[in-house]
Image: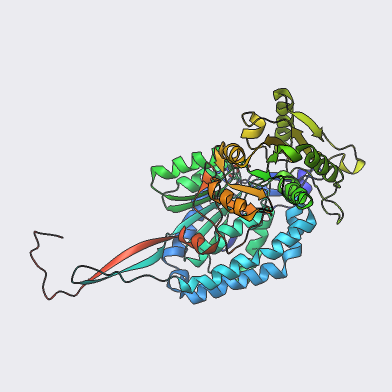
Length: 495
Ligand code: ADP
């Protein structure tokens, strides 16, 4: 079986390379549960090779001396190539992670905007002249950090890759990216476009493999200066501690248990669509999933009924079919984990009002499918309300007034996002001030843009991606002093 599958290669220093170990692992299509290609199993030797290639490209190559406008032109060209090949990239992404083809096409057609935005920003990063109190001209220069490592998960592989790559490159860094072991194909495919765009060798590198085997060596490598990580809070915290040993900079985009809060004056049809998109979109496998539904008591029963009817009618099945609304879970491990949480919720005493099992459809026989699942009667101290499930499982919690809604929403170790559904804009604005979350959506959910900072409060992360703030993660400030004094004064008294 394995012998028939095509072998992918890693991309290091502008060359397509085999892993040092000579070992490969299978990547599996979650719809068929069958392997479809072989991915290089990188280890610390590959990590070292990639980081050294990136370091050389940063120090010695044309990238360093290239004017920022020229850097921007290359980044823009890469965006155009992605736009041209978006549909082909979407097909590959679906094969690896089972997301809906329609959604992945939409997402990958949107990705070029990140490259265009940061390409435009590359030559607009300005320093400042300080109003100095000494006889000197003092000014600051924003400078790149050096080699930046990006480690990304499997739920939106190319999007999350680009959120890191585009600003890191625009700031003048070189990068080594590691996609998740379940979804390495699009990152490697993208390297064909990087070659076409004409990036100097070593500026963009992709290595593949497992977290412990190649991810950690990338983070701990002495030449790595920054880690951009998206993934679980446990892994992020671990990598943060490894980076801290060498005082490396980190940006972390971690887990969530985001509340979607529906008040009794909301437009309930819109709120239903928003709640469904928040938890069943992408089969619930997003860090921003609105996995806690907080509903005001007066409309609780009516809302749950509407929501269950809408969600129960969603078409589960082949992610490649245009009419499918909910695809499979992306991999076997995650599938078992989600089913485990459904059991936990039952044991904790939550009431199952929808789903909770595999769908009985021949189309879904082999894949990792779980029906859209809704629990009511959830208390905020239950595990199902506190821990990230990363699947199509919604926990419904009832509240009486705004104060209680805020208290429940904020009683979480996470703080990635929150949704508020109400027709009272004063209340919406007060809520946006009171909620501990990096993004607050009012009468909408799951919006992100290349223009708007995104990141977490509390254990949901550190730093911001997107917008002008996003590029600052990849810059450091150098202060330059140029004396205007006639002579160096008393050398023994500084100040
Ligand atoms: P998820 O639950 O989304 O898979 P993880 O945090 O386990 O989240 O994985 C996200 C990314 O982090 C993947 O690319 C994975 O290979 C990588 N990863 C996991 N563990 C480690 C580790 N110990 N060191 C470096 N990278 C890791």
